[in-house]
Image (cartoon, rainbow, N blue to C red; front, side, top):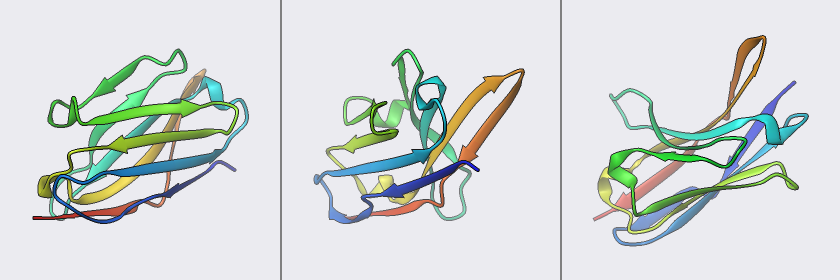
Length: 118
């Protein structure tokens, strides 16, 4: 059973920083594309950033230059460093793990709240 456990959320003032972590209990973690998504109240869940097994990264336009995704395969963990936070970044942040093995499999964490005050 795959489990993703996020941590690092909290309340921060605008302009501040947070680092989210997601620890994954999966076999062969390095095979997975890992992603961070976020969902604000009344809005859909959107991709924030992703990092492939080859460490290629992809970012939403709204976070480019402010957020950095990274992974530590030895620790089965993916990180999201968030700098220059804005009130619009307020949302529940979810970790996602995706892998193709004949079929596509993806898994979600329980989410961690990030609140940015103005």
